[in-house]
Each structure stands twice: as structure tokens, then as C-alpha cells.
Image 1: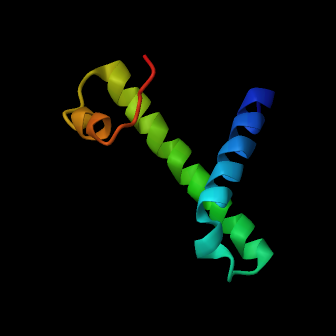
Image 2: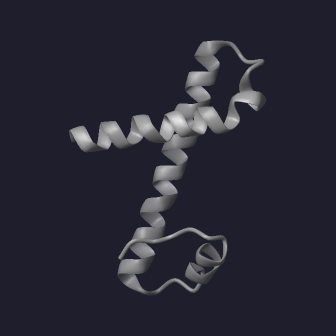
Length: 74
């Protein structure tokens, strides 16, 4: 894995954990880590799909993401 990937992933996991702290605080620490890791993986996979849709310019759902306020770098 690239160092930038690890750094980005750590930052993403940290932001997700911070955003969800009130919802996941009742879980044991290990389960919190697993959940945040799974959410980060799911988010990254969805971003890959969106990026591919931009490259292919074949997705009619692209407007849906833009309307939600997600910025897609080109």
C-alpha cells in the first residue's frame, strides 16, 4: 500500500469515529474500531464507483451525488 493511502485512510477513519462517537460509544473499543474500519472501506469503495462513473461519463446517477453536495474531482 502507498503511504498516502494509509494516511488518507487513517484520516478518514478518524473523522468517521469523531462523527459517530455518540452513536458507537456503547460498543466495546474493539467493535468500534471494526465498525469504523468497515465504514471507511465502504465509503472508499463507493467513491471508486463514483470516480469510475465520471471517467466513463455513462452514469445518469451522477446528478444524484452532486445534488447531495459531494464534490467529485475531475
